[in-house]
Each structure stands twice: as C-alpha cells, then as structure tokens.
Image (cartoon, rainbow, N blue to C red; front, side, top):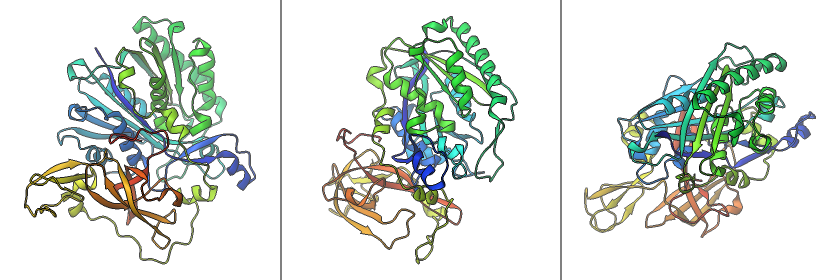
Length: 481
C-alpha cells in the first residue's frame, strides 16, 4: 500500500493584527491575525522547519530518495533552494533535491509528484505572502510551510494515510499573476474566475471519487485551498459534502499561505483525523486538483509532534505594523552607523557544510567531550583526529548567560545573544530569536532553529539560532517547534 508516511508543519511565531493595519492606514483591515515570518526567515528556512517535523521519526531521513521544494517566493533564482534544505536535514548526497517554484500551483504539483513516485519522497510546500500596504494580499495573506513524506510499507515505515485517488484539471486563466521582480500580485475581477473554478473543482472531484469508488457523502474531512477566496467558499458550499465535514481554512488565525496553504490544511486535518476516515483535499489555481486519502490505524501513533493548532496558539502578541513593514522591506529606516555586514564566502561555507547547515558538532572518542563548532583536537584530553560527528539540531539546552546588544546590526533591535549549555554536554554562543528581552534569562530552556542570519551583497547567510521553548511544549531533547 502506497501513501503518506509522515508529515510536519511550520507556522511562524509572529502575528500581525489586521485591525492594526486599518488603524495606521485608515482603511478597512478586517478581523483576526496573519502569521508573519520573522526578519530572519524566508521560504527556505521555513521549509527546513517543516521538514524537521516530518522527519522527526528515527531512521526516516535515511530512507528519503528525493526532495522537492515548492514555493512561489524562492529565496534565490537560478540557484536551487532545495539544496540548502537538503544540507540542513543532513540527507544523503545521492538524494535528488530540486525546486518547483514560480507559481502557487507548484505546491499541488509537488504533492502529486511525490504521491505518484515509487521512490520515498519528501515534498515541502513553503510560501511568504506579501502585498502592497493595506492591500488584500497583505491583509489576507500569511506565511508558513508544510512537509510530507510519501512512500509505502516496502520502505520500512507504516503508511498513515493511503492515497485512494487523485485528479487534476488544468486551465489557462488570467485571474492572478505577478511579473518577475514585482512586489505584489495583480488580480482580475473576482467574479470572473469564481464560476470557472467551481466547475473545474467539480470535474476533478467527481473524477477522483469515481476512480476511488467513494461517495461524496462519505467524506469525513473536506479541505479547499487556493488564493481565490470566493471560489474556495463556493466550492465548500456547493460540493455536496456533509456540513460537518468542511474543515476550517485557518484564514482568521494565520491567513492564506499561498503555496503552503494546501499543506497546512492537510496537516491540520491529519492532526485531528481518526483511523479509517476519508480526506478530500481540493486545490484551486490555474485549474483544480484533488487528492483523496484514507487514514490508517498507524496515524495516531505517528502524528506530527507539534500540531498546527498548537503552533497557532503559541503565536506572539500582535507586532507593530511599522515593524512588519520594516521586515518586509517596505519601509526604509535609518540603519545603524556600523559597518555593513559581510556576505558568507563560498569556499569556507562549502568546506563546513555539515556544521553551517546541519549544525553537526563533534564528540571526542577518547573522553566524550562534545565540541561546538567541531574540532580536530579535543580541548579536554588533547587527542587528535579522534572525533565522531554529533548532530545537534534536535538537542535542547539551557541559557548559561546572555547579552542584550543595542548596538549590533539587526532589523529587530536589540540583538539577543545567549550562551547555551546543551543537554549531554557542549556550550555554544548564538543569537536568540522569536524572543523579547524578557525571554533572555539565565536558566531558560531553548531549542535550535534554522534561520537566515543576514543577506549581504545579494547572498543569504543561513545558520542556526536558539529560540525559547514555549509553555506547553514537552521538555525533551527531540522537538521541532
């Protein structure tokens, strides 16, 4: 039986209240909040966080045969972004890593490619939605990522949701587009595409149901994703599913995450679904696509460690609108009078890939001392070249001391720097993110997160930072959010 083996989701910590947008601009902003990627996050870093959740099970990383990253907002053009995700996860060098980028529909394409493949496939959907200040894309958008591993029992992992059927319908519709380099999308009048999408969704859903011999009334969870809000609402209303089967779209809490929205909705359903239930995921955008899944008895024991609902609940208090605009590059502010940051240099970065991207330390085989960063010579017993690799991205630690730096260059002053004593040994100094000054406390528990530390001379510098372990999260060495 082929199907879904594992999944994970990532919702950024920060929130923007729509009412605050209205208060500043004097426009109608709506209710609720949207999820906001931090100043040190992009679609690549969020993809890593979602994938870490999907691969939390022991031994699963070694089974992955290919990796696809789908996004409409790639951190790089020309350069493959999925290779950074590959490096951060420490996957085998023979694993194919490739992007599916440029359109929101790439998320559906990545899901279907993974579901159809005989090779165990990790597919990650990630997006960062930005619009002009006060525009509908800014207000209704959201940021986030979701990751899924497709395979089968022959790959040594239990299937948590069997793929019953899928279908797609493609259509050339000029209803949303964005020219390369443009800050926001442009859209046609909403009523134009609404009826078209409803018809396309009906065709795809009917074909998938017929192929699986499933009745529309037996669907237990019905999720519809897409950036055309009116069309999505119409599909939910007219599809013929039971009202109680229609799943919430999460728009009021985190907004619409574009490419990642289908993945976030599916992950949220899997967080709640019981064994033997049927899930229908409908994705709208330049056509329609449908995936039909049926959960198995293995699902309860293999759910994501941190549910989507928990990540929503752990979000920050709403951030100032001016801070959001600054992080998005829409508000130029006076920079600190400090030298410009230097970009990373390619040769040393390549030599230290395991440390820089994978946060792999070393442990002395003679005395057991852990070294961060990895070293050839043990600082305790002075043994030379007697080290084993020690992956650290899943290891939590305790703040030993900290600094609040009000002079350092950062888009979110002040910069918080902590010295972390890791469980099992080892000490390292790094930045503390997703935090306020009140979170920088000696004895505070922290975990590691993959971030974009700076962009200089057109080059992104990725590395690991610490973040607080939030209330309600289990205090264990393995965790992803």
